Image (cartoon, rainbow, N blue to C red; front, side, top):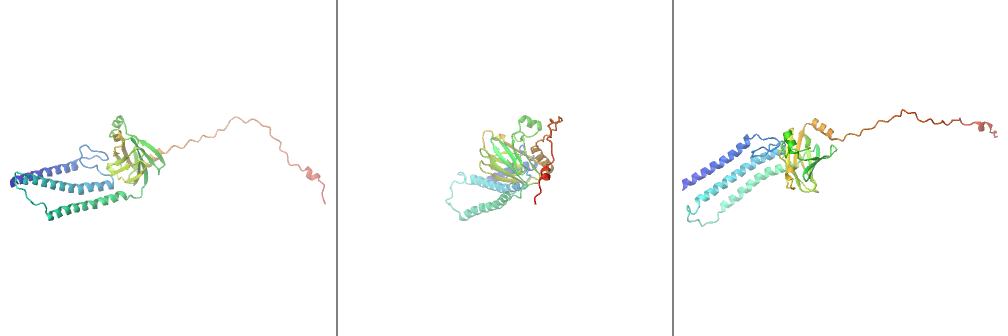
Amino acid sequence: MQSRFHGIRALATRIAAGFVGALWSASAFADDLIGQPTDKSVMMQPGVTPLKRDAIFFHNDILFPIITAITLFVLGLLLWIVVRYNKRANPTPAKWSHNTPLEIVWTLIPVLILVVIAVFSFKLLFAYHDMPKPYMTVKATGYQWYWGYEYPDQKIPEFVSNILPEAKAKAANVPYRLATTAPLVVPVNKTVQVLVTGADVIHSWALPAFGVIMDAVPGRVNSTWFKVDRIGTYYGSCRELCGVEHAFMPIEVKVVSQADFDAWVASKKPAAPAVAPAVVSATPAASVPAKPVTAPSTKLALSAPATH
């Protein structure tokens, strides 16, 4: 019986190790796309902001090993109990029901695990709320079913960002249902504050490559931020079930150089109204008889008698 138990345990260990190895290998060797989903990838999108890189570290290097160890440990315990304490292998069950040292151990170990997770979790949570002084602010408003963007600092009024039609997306070789008609444009290596709100129902402004997700709630303005360190195009989508066309309100952000951003801002400014030149008439004005100008009369002054 013992040999059979050891054989089953060894087999379960090999299966679990193979599964974890395959998972990590898929992550390590997958040629993940930047800023958009990668087919058959099992891990998160590569990060292009400090926040997303910290989130990936927290997930891959802290949470994932802990979760894997707990899962394998519980699986081993279940197999051990099934094999060692089934009715056929253990016809006379034990009568005890408590083990104080064991209960203390399985209470303290989970507490210690949660403390370790909390230390890294609170550090990351603080970083998300510790926004540096923003270079610019953008307002994102969720509608059923599209996004509107406004640039208060650049005096650019709100413009609409709809899903790009499938034919145009294929012609431009961009991902359908992620590309938009008017992307949000921001400069690289600059802190951008995003004010998020909703016009009708709850939406959610989410960019996986940025590590940003923020609910757009009607009557409330929420704030988030990002600082992208590489030029490129990044895609996201609404993450709330906001209606029947929820899947058709994507988010596209173009990160460009400062010079390109300044040029884009200039192109969005309304053109100054043209001033019509003054018209000089070539036709001489109608002649008006000039009123004779008479010199002031001195006759009275000369003929007046002198007074003594």
